[in-house]
Image (cartoon, rainbow, N blue to C red; front, side, top):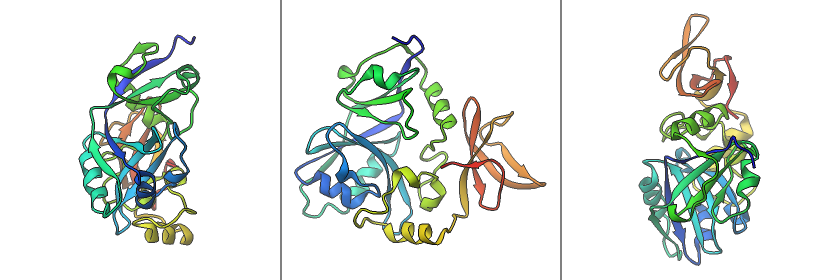
Length: 258
């Protein structure tokens, strides 16, 4: 077994969605194709307002035929519930906050060492060296050494994944996010906000603000990004090797997030 694996319970809210209509309801509300999930699988998705602007960025885990969890950056769980409840209507689906946690494992072949246990949740960047598990704290495994959640957060930035409320803001245009390729399905049925996403994608239109990745150098959170003497952005997340910044679409510094 690898000796470099570390784990930490990271700052995520976990919402439980369950009921006979949970799968069809979630698929009607989320931008990604949750109906395609088998039990034990997971995916990331944007949750949009009816206007098409970002409400939240969630990860969906299918625990059974009728039970799902949506985990979201800390502080946004209740907002997710309020947003979803607006559209429940007659669907047999309930939403509630829970005391479940998200335990992150990072290190060489972490995913294979954890295996296909209940609650496994993929990371968006698809590395075999990273896996999360969502569940009751009493049921979660430990593997390797515990570490500070801040270390896991730095690794997230290095892997170019945005944090809601920090890099990606509520009310942003989806194209700002840089995660459309893994958090939106362009072939599934309708969902709130679909028109804006489809229109901007088909026209190749960029958002006024985009997330970009730059080398870390001596940049810290809040550092201004200057190009040709012009202020073009602000650093929002810092990793060990790179940073994520909210940048003007006219900027050519760094690389797109996705």
